[in-house]
Image (tube, rainbow, N blue to C red; front, side):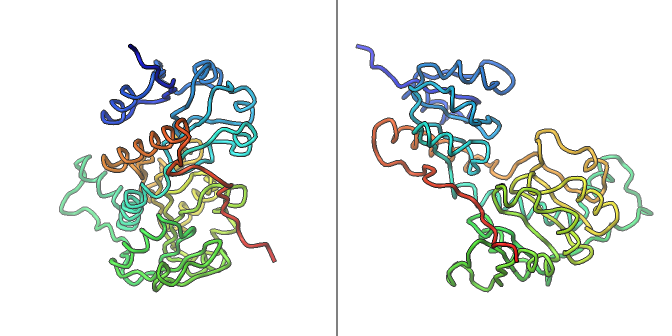
Length: 332
């Protein structure tokens, strides 16, 4: 006797262990195309489905939730960020939203340190010299900037920010941070708190972004905030590309106002502003923050745990229960 399985729409391919669990527990509807679903295609695939397993490139806006079939009870995203989902529209339809907080903290913090080192030590230029065969005994020495003794400003001191702070201390950096609220002493450790983000920028010889993208943080890095940084500061972004005004950062990199940048995320990715590619003082990665075997497997299992729990009427490990806005202090 066949057992009815819940219908699960799966918008991408995942590690083998995750795919095996999907096949075991669900009647899976997978995307047969070599590109993401369009909104209409995803809505069509969702007809009669119980749940959706989505990626950050699946944009679920208010129009999507107006038209999503009533059969859909839960949508779980393979990400920590939920800025690609209209959470209020989902709540209006009483659709549970699952996400994967905390799991990628260490992997993303590792990438932040890689970007910090790569940008500050001119790794792109060094790689280019080696790979193009232009490295000779008379080649100029690529003088970079070391981390030891420098102030690292962390904008957004959540799990990832705290993991970066822990690693930065090992490099002899002094940690300052800005956050909606001050951390408890046990988590803050020796970090210096700034209730005002501009005050953080003024002391940050290195600045690492770890805030979610919200209306308050969108384009936080712009010509005005860049001018607050110490001259020759180095910027790291493993959060969201939308935190940065690309044209303003590129201008600052060209002028030397910002010495270098290490970027793993971009506004409009996978497309990125071509100005970054032409610069020598950028160290660029293709959104690899959580891309370790261990992290991606754990994320997929939490996605399925969330879906399982909602469909079975049990407590889920990580549902979005409120707007996770990174609210900045009121402007004076």
